[in-house]
Image (cartoon, rainbow, N blue to C red; front, side):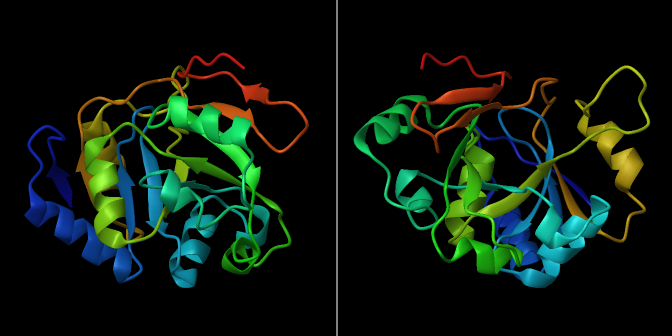
Length: 207
């Protein structure tokens, strides 16, 4: 199912529909402020396992990022952060960044792993932020790669996404939020003594 949601004129009925799918364990393809992503309810273990299987791996082996609504939301899933890290996040969210932070003790249980870090994003996309707010907790996501295109790594056209996945039993909704970008988020590791950019993407940041 392909639905169009204009982030400047959000249809709350479609938002509720997306949230209901997430709550029932469904997987969405959704826009962000960078590339399109596949996502599910962070607190639905069955959906997490299904999303990992779509990546061809097991849940305890995959590195999903979580999309949060705001910094208060982030704090529910990470250990207390120091002043400099908070300042960095405050100045650059919402935006095209993934910040690697020390996960709290609840996160390993969600992913059936002993991992002590988690990638968090607050994307600058009103549609996604509204869905997260209505859901009440983060969406676990992974970037949507176009494995069949020899030139492009990621989908940019939502109609091309629909054509590829319209017969998929794994995807319950594709949200058309306009053309996506070709650049992924910039990944910043905040777990060490100094901040480190480990992947340069769409976001420009001064650390």
